[in-house]
Image 1 (tube, rainbow, N blue to C red):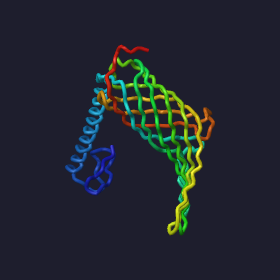
Image 2 (tube, rainbow, N blue to C red):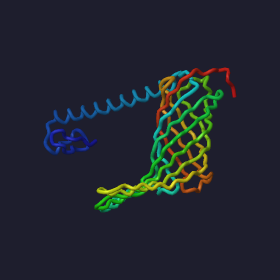
Image 3 (cartoon, rainbow, N blue to C red):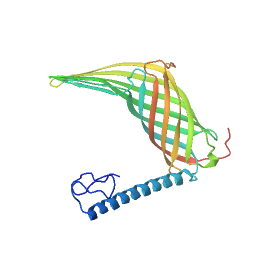
Image 4 (cartoon, one colour):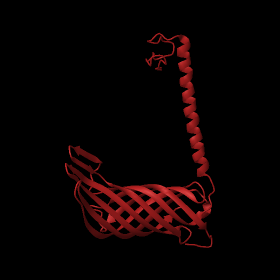
Length: 257
């Protein structure tokens, strides 16, 4: 075992009985040994408490609700983007190559025991490049606004009252794309050029609701967007989201699939 001398931050030997390089006393080394054991015990207790808290929530009986609204952030990895985020910063030229980031608001309502109808409105932006000049700056940004209607199927029955609720989802709708170019002159004017186009598309994916109470929970999901209903489209790709959701309304067990 390697220990650290608290006196000068030197490493001692591989066992507690070896002399310290900075000639610490046996009492100082023994104190360091006890401190290390204490740190391990504290970390172990924290890990056990965290697991117990998660397990208690996982076994909690949560009353199912009928309607909800969700807010989440996401990262959209489009086919046209590189496999990794590349940032170029050279003199007056600045460019970011990667997927788009943004946010969503979702509304969903139970239509039967396991089915929900969902409406999703998103706004995803991606900076293409930014060039600084002595008299101004040019910036190009691409923005995507999807308006999607779909269905969500929960794999667990609401009668289980589980607070862990996995689901699969699918839907379709229009995707509005805007290529925005901003030409700014510090002492004169600013020009904004927007080239937009509307494309149809769809999505499929799944997620997990982790309810902390009957009305509040966390949401994690993954979707694949088929822009132009073509997986090879430059704008198609996986989207990863994480957010919050709020629910209300009583579940009526009389509704059946």
